[in-house]
Image (tube, rainbow, N blue to C red):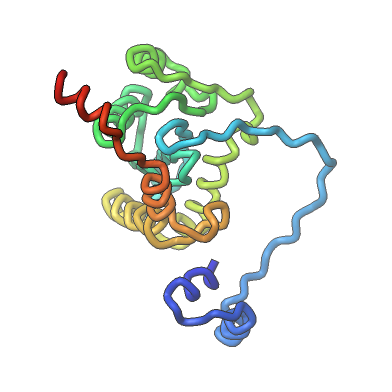
Length: 226
């Protein structure tokens, strides 16, 4: 991940130089060796074709220095890999989830579908009524099959490895500030291999410029007539 950042900033071009600096600064991380599992057929997940079409969300739990647990609710856009929001509190019920989604709709518009698990916060009456009211399809994964929501699982892994495991939080507000700063950095600075080394913000901007077509003369005249 460091090489695309250094190349983007114009500091290095050759990948070998990045590797040499990486080793000299003792930045290498010892990775745990994964045990080989039985090969199974991978599930092909349907991918959206535009931003704001399909979201995904799931809970991640962490704790304060005092030992008190708190919950985080990351919500991502599957197409752009953008982190839309990370709600944080000691308790987040279904009604609270719908309020977060209402705020996102006001600022971004309404998605066509949201992939979620079968937790009580998502499978309750509050989410069911919200989805019906807004015409949003709720894609519930098969119980015990988190791979069916692989995009949010991947994001949650990065959130835990790059943020939650790197900090001790004294208060809930400190956790909110730190995680929000990480979320902004994730969207605006961190390169993503699945986006050809772009940040989610840069990817969305490029997509909009590429797919934005000027209105033709007939459309403009119809608008004036209306």
